Length: 484
Image (cartoon, rainbow, N blue to C red):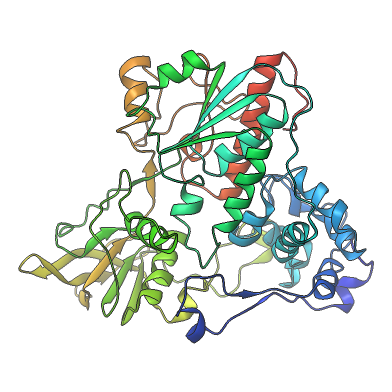
């Protein structure tokens, strides 16, 4: 906890944003950091609540010891605060920026709609640690002589790689793209998290002995069997990238796209890379001067909204089939769990028109080009209501309704053809493994992250990567000191 009476004396404050009219002119982060004294005041609000639901299992998937590091920040002990935070979370500068903060939903003070600003404090700890030079490589003192290959360098793969390298193993990470980071780098826009934070962690991990092999599409450029032959263990952390099939007529019109190719292209532009990317369409997708419709109500849809505004879209409309949620939840019914309530992302606040309880019937066009999106209102069972049809003008439309699993034309095809790996039979292509030892049906092969659990949060990927690393270390060495 922080100050005993802090929650009664200090109001909740969050970092401010640049005005929308300014931030849509660039792709950089637009949060205005708090000063150290302001952060310490927010940490002081952490109360002696008896049962701190904030750090799990309802609050934080990695079980951050939130009351502990709030107290350390309040007392100005930044060095110990980052050590405490790193004991559960390898990359707090990532989660402090892009996690939706279920910990704040679970905070006892959220019963009064004024939770501790946990996410703000977490980011501040990580940024302060870099500023003070506290984050440096921590190479293993003793090497085990074991080699581990990790397929995919997203948050699960990076977390596992760092943990295994610190346990003394020789770790090789194989990444399909030209730089490490997975969808952290190529899926999440820079205005939410600039990529220098990934680069700094990669440099640290290289200093710890991790070797990154970029531009290697495992299953195409190199077989999984060859990795297994050259390593004592292989961990597959491929992510969830195959878009769900929307089943909406008219998807063949020019101007209709899945969300991810659009986001990947823009991230590659910002990173000064060629927009061509393995697995994604390479024709340029740009929203400048266009009327844009985004189908979907989640984070990916919101990222499309913010990207379209920054590219100069004339108007952006977001369609959500769900009813408009209440402004405030029933605390006694849902706390400390994540509540369904009206939430407005920073991208939506930049001027998006939001339509709720609306179904997308079809994309309409002329001469092969998209001209509009035909919609209608739906009832509580999401069934179309007759006579409520309308058409929204659109030159560009994005489908952002989620992902069904990993790509099936590389690693999974290789595994299925040669090793007959077990995948989920419920309509997805996720690889089957439990969350205790993360072993697959193939010997020497483990799996973690979205490729196992389905699309989820970055913080869940970090948790799974850490737990899989522990399982692999224990399997290779007979025992482990890595935390679960």
